[in-house]
Image (tube, rainbow, N blue to C red; front, side, top):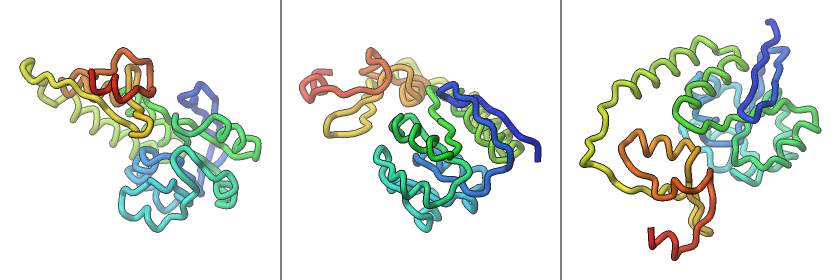
Length: 203
């Protein structure tokens, strides 16, 4: 199999010289992409919060969403680690120092999700399945009826409750809210951030 090269969502060039057979996922969203590409039989580690599809409950856990246990990841002997924007940068750096290949999947909008599905497909040798999945999702998104102008809810997407951690602009969650016809009340925030209970209630 020829080597493949991609540029991940942090701008890092990733080269795989062989199709990965042992994959660790560091986020539920990545686990679901891998499952949708038929790769669960190659996934050897997931986070404590990965819960879909149900079959992932039988895969060894390697720590929490933002509290990855580096020694547990290394013990799974992965040839590909799929990180997210919640994965601490120091965790990614440490895993790379250990010689592991880490790709960052961090889509900022719906179109980026399609791009990232294709990127994971390229890295894992499942390009055809990735193309079908991305094309189907794109078609479903394009066919969705535009929201009624009278149906304009204000929405807060809360990532965590203590402290209150919300999605602002330039996030996938903001793009989904806008596509659904809503208004993100924290669109003035760049990326994700915390807000006080008072600010939250005032909005």
